[in-house]
Length: 76
Image 1 (tube, helix red, strand yellow):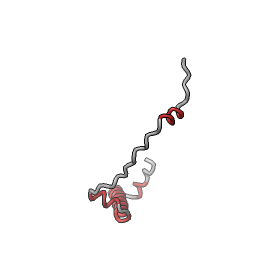
Image 2 (cartoon, one colour; image 1 turned 45 degrees about the horizontal axis):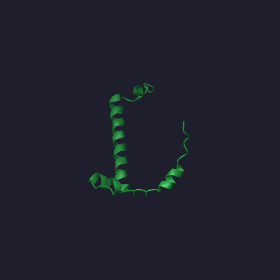
Image 3 (cartoon, rainbow, N blue to C red; image 1 turned 90 degrees about the horizontal axis):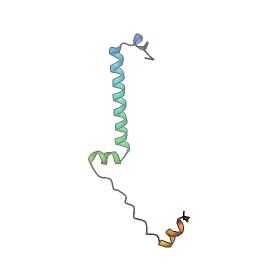
Image 4 (cartoon, rainbow, N blue to C red; image 1 turned 180 degrees about the horizontal axis):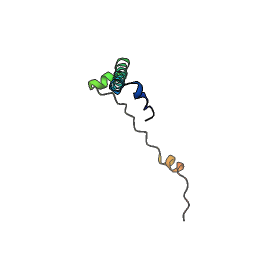
């Protein structure tokens, strides 16, 4: 372990709970910030479905345009 000598200064019975508490508080703060600063997270957590944008199918191209777009093939 890189920081093995840390436990000579800080007791593991103090350092480990302190570290885990800091992770929990940080995670809670990030989640609170997401819920309070965005609109879609609240809707997502409440189960509201988002409006899905649907793309329209492209218009069918004329056969002459398709034939001109393909490269000419040489017979073997």
